[in-house]
Image (tube, rainbow, N blue to C red; front, side, top):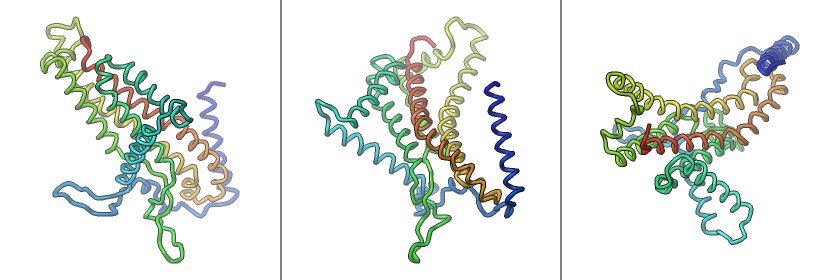
Length: 299
């Protein structure tokens, strides 16, 4: 049996289980008051308006501060406690450093560029990785469904990731794109840099459409780099949310949670063990490739 057939069979089996449970235990009806998408809604906690710019403090801002603070604190902690005989923490950090320096930056940029931009690329990798990992820690951020404890209302625990908000990956992407364009112009000059967008050997009228195709590809890079990170993290969180009980609540079949909860645990472990690191690695690697391509002598 092919892999595709197994996947389709698994989906069909799951739908069949839902149907059987619905007939056996009945359903209280679809719960229209439960809106899973509200987990990603950003209600302002502290409203701050700077002219036309909304600077309000919300859930995403909190997670960004946590990610930045934890990244800086962890690196300072390790840097101030370097030992000749490293412990496990230092060994892990040194392995991450080697990955970022040799594989991500050094493997995709000229040596001079890798030395110059390594700190930036490494910061991208660490910040995105920490943001992704914090996103899988349950924190009391759900103000829509508070919990009453001794008459005091507290926010409920929920999962959220700053990188599941498109604004964050898009901002990081725009910084990367602006930086490598500036570096390419600095290295080659403005017109020589634009000329480098046309592959060697393409001359005459054919160069015009090729150049515009390359212009389009530059905009596609912005979309692909930002949306890839955003979509993967958002999809992972939605899968965990639905399998952990959201689907049972929506369909009004509580017993369904007994079958979907193991899937939620599997998705959760898969996300924290692979997806969080992989997406940070892909974002940093593509950024390094774009930097390398901007200063390359040939397209």
